Length: 168
Image (tube, rainbow, N blue to C red):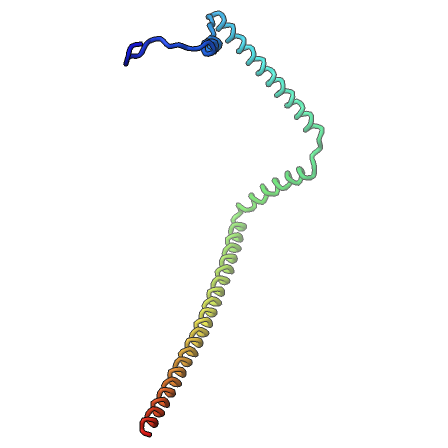
């Protein structure tokens, strides 16, 4: 090796050489074509097996549905479907539409009335709460006034006593 320059050759050990040889296979065009043909045949066999299974399941399903009688659950489902269709047809009649509109208006009016009553009740409760708070604040104010008056009286008494002691 030259100093500061890279050489074109490298040394590898025996294990590494064996690994490289094993991982690379030399395949000719004929072998490659045979491999492709084998893979295509394998895929076709899998498709055929899947198709056979699919037809078998379909035939079993058809024979099963022919043997099982319709249950009351299914009969009820059919009847409800017919009932729904009949109801939908009746809904399209003008008289029914008018009646439904009036019923919906009545529901809305009832709900609005309840909302108004609830708003009045909330207003009444707020007024009561405000009155109670006003009363409490007034009581506190009166207590404070009484406390200050008592303090003033005590102060005046102390001043009088101080004057009397000073004069004596």
